[in-house]
Image (cartoon, rainbow, N blue to C red; front, top):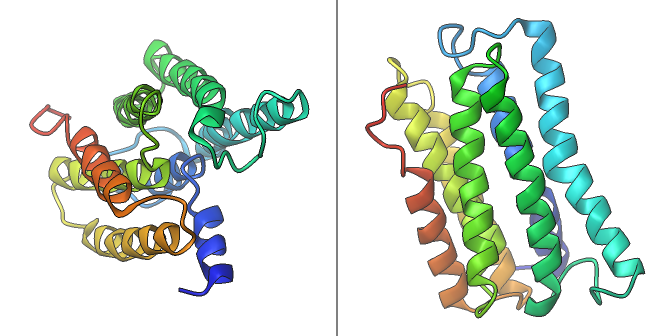
Length: 206
């Protein structure tokens, strides 16, 4: 794969952006019976997710780089990912807590955000001894969440997004291999782990 295309795919489908994509799908694609939140309030939810799961962790990583705690903003070295991952885990946990504590949010928000947060903690723990692919865990987890949502909904409206995401996952994982960011094993294990976490709530009544 061309390195420029591989880099574009890696950035567009960065793990920190995946929660925003998932919530955009939940808020604007799922049927009305799945999400009861009024339409004007949905923009605020999406903004909350974008700020807490992308902007804050990204800005924190930028500050860590400026302080010399991490060597590169792209976190190429395994040791560089420890503090940014911890920061992301804290931000994701806070977002999950907000969705859990506020009764006017749909239950699906907390369940999905909770699963996403679990993938971040899995990455954080494994990264202490092995550079597992965060992209792959995020992609696998996102696909698992889509399959989970598909099982909860009465109509098969998520078939196209699921197929599209399978194709996207293959392209992004190929991109990561092309860039030499991870080994094949780190890519495949990450995707499998993310998928397992993503479907971990299978059978739970929605």
